[in-house]
Image (cartoon, rainbow, N blue to C red; front, side, top):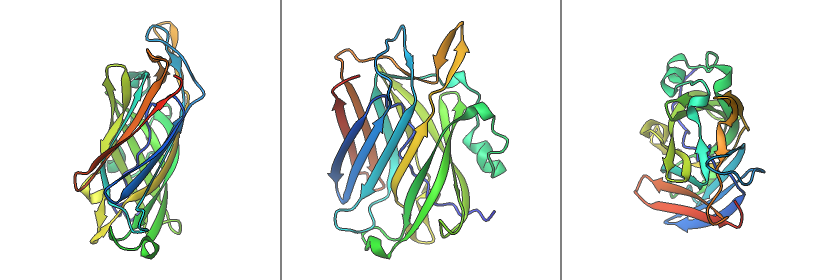
Length: 250
């Protein structure tokens, strides 16, 4: 496979454990994020296993190619990630092999699709090429994850296979996922590669651990009965925007 390193930042894969929809604009970018699960409740002592659906959209209100997002930070109140529950498949191993064929079957968390533009930020989006890429989300162990992105013609002008390393995060009762997209995946041959939409589903996965059924993603509830859900987008210019929504339930 011809490896063309491109089109990799995708804001997805988190532990959002409720439904949210919100849009916000910063600089030249407008962000819209939605996420949800059917699981509600749970406590720290008795968490509930959960799955996840997550989408985001990015656009420029002027109809131009949007600014490239460099870093994504996804945070959800009342969430927990048990990354040691499943075997791992590391981003470096995926890149070295140029295939996920050797990844443990149980390391696969979910799948999704992203769409990226190939053009120059600030120029008309109608003149940019579009690339649609499927991806898989793997647990990597040690509190890490990997986004495995593969593209084939004709749905994309180029063929590629590339991993994006990510890290599961924990701040008090808030859990999430964060990753920084490498420069080689944000630019190619003098062009910008902003990801303008992404959608993913992480399965509800449970395993027996210490005599009880444990979920890879779990809901631990919220003290005020409401769940704070947020995604922080940071562009290459350093413009940071947090799209936050407080849900009426948890």
